[in-house]
Image (tube, rainbow, N blue to C red; front, side, top):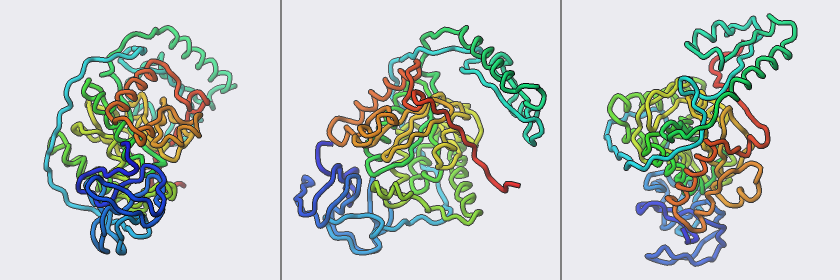
Length: 425
């Protein structure tokens, strides 16, 4: 990507500005030259040819909406002249197009192997009179290691702080009895999430994560893609990659159930992108979703998980969770993700229950927020290949799995939020 603009797919009628472009500049697409009619901010779209009102605007090779007015070649394409085409539930048909990832050499990280294959120690704290009391919670947890998972009901002890610290010391003593050892990366489960996206997210950071996902799955590992509302408009790409018709039907239900959830609460399904997304160059939900799903790479979809359900199958999984950064990231951790890759063009300092690797889509963010960002994909707008950057990200993730702290851990952040539906009494 050494040009000033990027045409992502041969069928696109718009390109993305890789840096700020000034009105009057002459641009060359390789086939022809034209003059910019207005300034184009970095990450925003410009028309490669005249686009009549009412016709599709095409990016990533797919429509991202309809021109709401005539758009002249060389003009800025954004919310002022582009509108979404999304509305309600759709009917889908299975057109399975499976691309099996080519096997790769085995790679290892330095990790802790617990009994049962899981890691970490947990103290579950309860008051004692909740509807979801600890005894109720245990019925959902099922079997657990009593050395690794401990419980404390605060109403049943004199000094809950002292008792809690005592249990935590015991958990630390238990955890310190283990030593790191080489573990195959096929044991890794990595969650995929984006937030505060910009117009470069879908052509730098998200495709890089897609390469990472392919590399991990090719070695027998597992990735989880979530935030269902940001699949709307790009779901066909995922549906066509479902392993079989059973997975296809589960994916259709995933999409339509979330649309129904929105509509049942009087919410339009296309109330996205956010103001920050729009400022960064994303114009419609289709535009956002087609960029968002780049994180899933090209591997087959092996399974679909309900909210709160744990991983059962290796490979690419889809998880039912909203777009909210912290809620979705917590859901990824609950599903079994040991690490989360979080791509962003605008930046965010949040953390989650597991190490969260922040990946910037542009170099300006990486340079301005060194306390937030762990890995920079903005260099792709200046040169290099997504394959090289994806391989570098793979190495970085193995380092994190081996104990390297991410920025949010260095800052001491560990956040958690659950998805609340229904009425609060």
